[in-house]
Length: 293
Image (cartoon, rainbow, N blue to C red; front, top):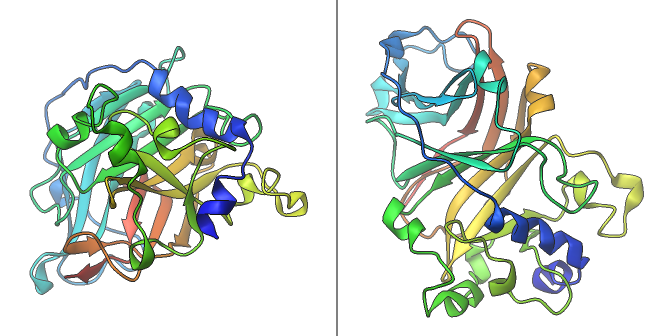
């Protein structure tokens, strides 16, 4: 049912994925790390004894920086409470306006398995279909695979179509998630080079016009995506508009999770979009982390 519904979407929905493959990218620009690891945590749930934050090295974005971080519990073997990307206030200003830009963000030492790669994408004009994701927004990719493995997802690979078409099935698939494609298109047609195949939450309000339920439609502000390649899910991805971040929100949303995970490690059961006034950072994070073997 999930696949048949997704592949019945309008072809313009698939064009949103295809456009990303054609966008230009830039190389990450590194800046020197600071000594902010000891910053105090004031947000509810993370002021418990033993909780502390560790940042990855910052990367210049706009007029500010972006950096990964992990909130860990020192009293529980450094188990992660939260893992995310922090954007300084300036990072939302003076952003590129020409095309999508990609920034690779170094991980902190406390980053848990299975996360091997974090990428921040800035989409200045969003991407089709019109009225769904055509708004300036950020993609927050958390990969379970290495940079080399991600870089190998290219159409020049003779196995590209076969690996794209090899979809996760059964207990690996989160409920009510499906890949985006238009009528007559295969997963290989809409897979994104150096990313993979994107699976959408079919209950997301921004999709409801396309799914024939216009009364439930709401303009896109945030959503949560899974990504697959060659039979396995390889990343999770909150996606958030710049406009929504500028409201300085503090919202947490549950994530539907699969019964079975592709690898061992810590996985989110929710994600959070917030503004930390103490550190003056916008944060988008995987939360409710649970360990799965």
